[in-house]
Image (cartoon, rainbow, N blue to C red; front, top):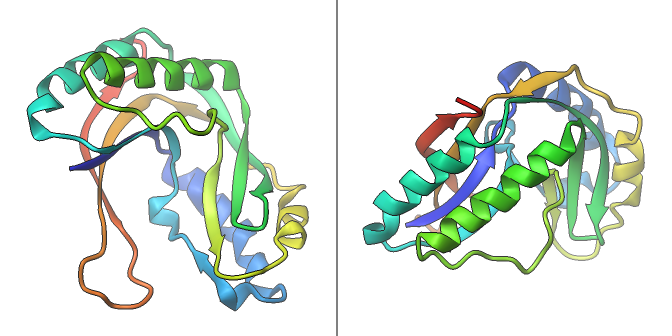
Length: 187
């Protein structure tokens, strides 16, 4: 099964970001972007990829331990940026040191459980808003999000999420996410 470890902001925070992001749809070339649905927005702490189900019990145990070693912490969705002209994202402010430590622990827990962790990119707290299809200048989109600052919220839960890739062949179909297990932070 295809898995990742995440922190999911509360609905109120996602709603604030969705309102801010709605204004981006009026920018040039916005119809050529593949927009992520707000229901799928999350902070990926560790991307695990395909994981053999036989590793799941130990992975669950180790991620639970990792969650309990880190306290709940305050974050807020804020600003925006881009990875080149490929990915548009919203950022975060607040206790990013704890979020980074949680990401490191999540990756280490997965490795100790025998799961190969994608470490090709260092952790950067972001929610993917859209992906470019072809050559699209994303700087105006990132600039439009620069002043966004959502309300503070508490990150209280670590989630192991399954990603079900589209199988219908319908253009534009997106992956579906299902929480496999979640743990309270710091308890």
